[in-house]
Image 1: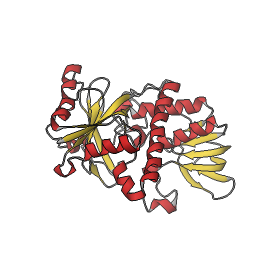
Image 2: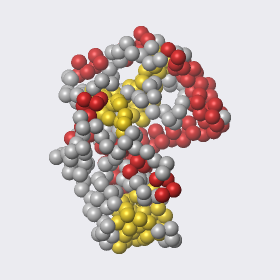
Image 3: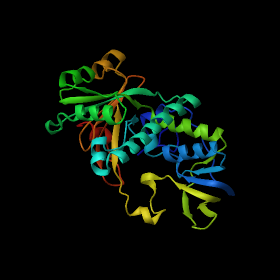
Image 4: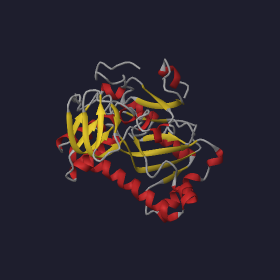
Amino acid sequence: MTTSPNGPGYPDSYYVATAKGLVERPVLDSEIAADVCVIGAGFTGLSAALNLAEQGMDVVVLEAERIGFGASGRCGGMIGSGQRKDVLEVEEAFGLERSQQLWTFAEQAKQEVRDRVAKHDIPCDLQDGQLIGVHKRGYLGWAQELADALTERYAYPFCRALSAEETREYVATDDFLEGLYDPEAMTLHPLNYTLGIANAASDAGVRLFENSRVLSYSKTDPALVRTAQGSVKASHIVLACNGYLGNLEPRSAGKIMPINNFMVATQPLGEERALELINGRFGVHDTRFVVNYFRLSDDYRLLFGGGENYRPGFPRDIERFVRPY
């Protein structure tokens, strides 16, 4: 991992090189108080902070690195419909009523992203549409079954099952045996969205601190959240650290393992050549367990993600690691 000259403190990436709204936040170096202390400045922490501030709460956010340093600033930028498991699997595990509740919750989350982007004019290249490519014969028929279930039981008539030939009209590959196109799913520039939420939170009165790693917090009321140079006294704490939680919360630390997925960006391909590969500015991913996912940037690069490792360190040469996928 190298530090990007475009954003000191960030790992070098296409997203950092094209970041908008990058603002350096201060280090916490004093003792302060708030209603809520949010630990972690990614999607979860910043959304929580903004929502709480809009409810009249006094909120402080502490980030160990920079805003959006982790997955929120480096992910594939795809916003799918529903949960990680599709509704057919969720129904089987939890029943129809709970599955419908979880679907509605996810739809509300999608709408919140749309509303935030519109309300705060966040320049995150929000685009509609996502195609899932079926790669395995054993999955044939799944796309139509899912589209029918969403129409009949979830009031979501938007998904369209595609034949192999129809799928090739969307994506220039013979790898997909069928497809499912969801025009209501989305893609975005994740770091720019994160920075936009941070700036909106700041405008709403949230105090944001970077390079302010939390060392410990007390289980008192109010709690005392300590960093190397300062502290926050707060009635409530939101832990929003995800994979970078470390040993901060021992009850969770033993249940977290590092899973790293990797992305590369091509040089600009030009609009004509790029649209020969993907026929539009929508996201694509497949049905593999270790998923491949890709889309076009606003300057018509191919942004491609694939391959995983399960340890703290990254491959020495990410381009070489991802290329076979």
